[in-house]
Amino acid sequence: MIKQILNRLPRKPSKSSDNREGGTSTSSSNAYTSSRNSDLASNHYANSSGASFSGFHSTNSGLNQGNKISQVVNAKLNGNTVATSFEALPNFRDVPNSEKQNLFIRKLNICCIVFDFTDPTKNVKEKDIKRQTLLEIVDYVSSANGKFSEIIMQEIVKMVSVNLFRALTSAPRENKVLLAFDLEEEEPSMDSAWPHLQVVYEFLLRFVASPETDAKLAKRYIDHSFVLRLLDLFDSEDPREREYLKTVLHRIYGKFMVHRPFIRKAINNIFYRFIFETEKHNGIAELLEILGSIINGFALPLKEEHKLFLVRALIPLHKPKCIPMYHQQLSYCITQFVEKDCKLADTVIRGLLKYWPITNSSKEVMFLGELEEVLEATQLAEFQRCMVPLFRQIGRCLSSSHFQVAERALFLWNNDHIETLIKQNRNVILPIIFPSLEKNARSHWNPAVQSLTLNVRKIFSDTDPELFEECLHKFEEDQAQENEVKSKRETTWKRLEEIAAMKAASNEPVLVSPKATTRNPSC
Image (cartoon, rainbow, N blue to C red; front, top):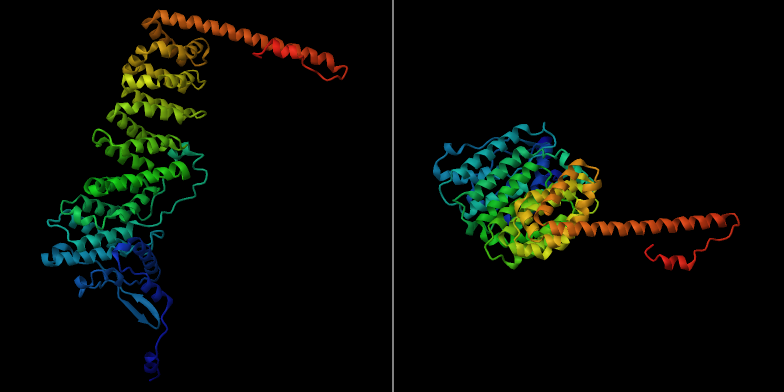
């Protein structure tokens, strides 16, 4: 009797049930909020072995009436929540064709549950069931033989958003900018949830690439917001995720032509933030790799928008210290522009000179390698516009005490096209670089640099002996004048030391005669 009376009394709802009710999503247009709420719901499920899935059916309640998920049933016993087992739904081959769409939606809803992968011993069975379900829907999308309906697309984008769009967690990155050259040897951080994320990425890739996906209909759900959140994931430290993102974004760019200007602008903004604010981003190389293929497909003549992108984003990407992480992809993009429009060579070369490293020898070697690729695509007219400042910098590289910098600069003469350009303009170029060549040949500490320098000198002496002799004569005159100035400077210092020694005994201040300063103004 007492037990019956107690059962009739109203019970105070527990905090956990309130959290479950507040953690559901009722709109696919707010996918980010849905993903965060589902994370909270899944964490609660992982902790208490129970969760409410009702929110995932709210969008299509008419379709799913009578098809409620039977895997999780909340039962209350003495105020505690207990969940039954998380069981798999039937295979597609086990249901008639008329029921396959409903089953597909139910499987998508199951896959909206996000588990906690930080503890590998937690919810092992449920994780395996979800992964198997993900694999099944991947096969279903791959073998689909009819256009996907709007309801299906809505559910697909919701499931993908819930699983992929999350806050990226990373290890502390203090001093990573200062240690940029050591990052290549650092072990990448792997996401513990990758066994599920990989299948979700594969599912998204198959969906976007499927001929049954109508781009005009799908663009309502794979919209600008979706693309932006996809781009945010490029900062993931897991290289496997960035590789999938690169492929998915490239397919989206190819299929949804209406999104192309927006995607380019969004990537621009990522570059601007990276260059001028943070200098921290894990996915610059992958974004440049996508842009490389995009630039390759640009129609001629190039639009002004594309030229501005080169000047405002690509060339300034040479500034950050962590350029070794993405230089190969950046160099390819730059070269593609020059090959598309040879008139851009002057702009590119002057941009490289603007950001040329001063004290970083490894970076200088990279710049020289990129410069060779650009010069190989440069025509005579553009070369002549920038050759004076260019070879002033090359002359400084030739006289570098770092043998790799000097050696890489001398390798430019191994390129037939560059050698031809230099020979055609030797009257301007040789006087600029001759002092560096001559000093290398006479006194550089590295034998390989000396040998390469002698080969370059021989090229000039064989091509134009008169010009070579003229430059040699001027070099010797300049050296004699420099030695004379050096001798006068040493004489002046010696006289000052003698005067100081004479005055030291009498404690008188040492005054320099005005005649001494006017006599040797060069000193």
